[in-house]
Length: 198
Image (cartoon, rainbow, N blue to C red):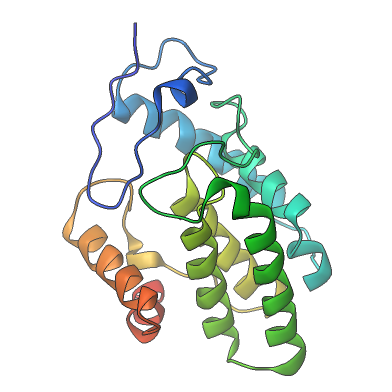
């Protein structure tokens, strides 16, 4: 039984080779996949809960990959590993490690120098991370969780609400989110900031 996935606006298709990394053979639809992924993500949230982090711990390739593996490791064999294929968005697959290093260095500088307010640092990091598109799948959810960890664990502020909706399903809320991400591509971050707190 193959994995039959239908994608909505803004979702990156999973290549056939990547589909072979599915660890639960009974999953055959997008709804089933979303359900299993959500259960795995809840395990990752439990791991994050109650932990304290320092900026130099968070902004490393190791932490970023480990968080992805904790979010998706029960579902995908490649969880936590950089993608090996090029996608319709994101940097060239060979540029991922370097682009991620630059981003991590940038955010450490922003934090040390109070370059932006805490919420803007979180959102700018989230946006750049999803733009790099490190992994075959789950980049949006992973980058949103990273933003929540930054705002909550480094600044002791409430996590973002992200429109208080399931952003993996087609909806008006997802449309607003995708539009805000595209505006951030043009260096207009306020709509994404507003959405994160809506």
